[in-house]
Length: 252
Image (cartoon, rainbow, N blue to C red):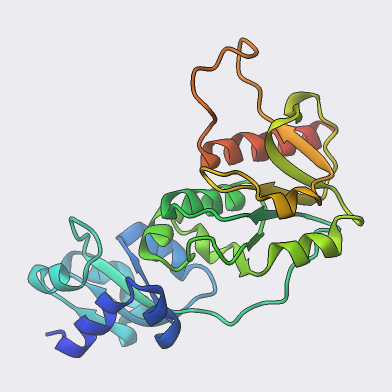
C-alpha cells in the first residue's frame, strides 16, 4: 500500500515550485514511461498495476505494485493507465551553440500542449536542443510531459534570457523568426544551421527579440491571402517550418 506521504509528494508535483523543490517530475502511461526510461532520466520509483508488472520487470528493485484505488489517488490523468514513474530532474546543461546545428528558440510558449508537441516535433526532425524564455511553460509540467510522448527524454530544454542568447549568436548564424509578414518559407533560402524562433500563442515574437531576427519567414495560406483565421497554432506552424527546413536540406 502506498503511504500518505508518497501520495502527497506525487500530487504536489503538479506545481512547478514543488517540482523544483524536490527535483522530481512525473510521467504516466505504459508507452510514455517505456519511452522515457529508454533515455537518460534517472528513475526514482515506478508504480505499476498487476497488468503491466511483467513489462517493467527490469526495474523491479524500484517498483511498487498498486491496485486501481491507489492509482486513482496519485494519477494526473482522468483515466489512470496503470503505470506512473517518479523521475529525477537532470542538472542544467551548457547552452547549445547554433553554429553547426539547428536550435529552436521559444518565446513565451505558455500552453503545455503546445510545448510538449514542439518537443515531440523537435525529436522527430532531429533537433536535440530547445532554448526557452523564462516565461515559457515548464517542460516538467505533467501535461507537457504527456504531450511530448516520450520525446522529452531525447531533447534538451534550457530556460535562459533569450535576448542574451540571440545577441550572442545573431551575427554568427541565421535567426529565422516565424512572423505573419515574413518571407514566404517556400521561397526562402534555408541554411543547414541557425536558430528557429517561435513566439507566444497570442502575441507572437516580442519586440525586444525582433531586432535579432535576420531571416523573417512566414507560412502562406492558399489561395494567397484567402485565410479566414488570424494565424496557425504555434505547434502546427512548428511542424510545417521544421518539415520545410529538413526537406530543403535533404534536397540540397
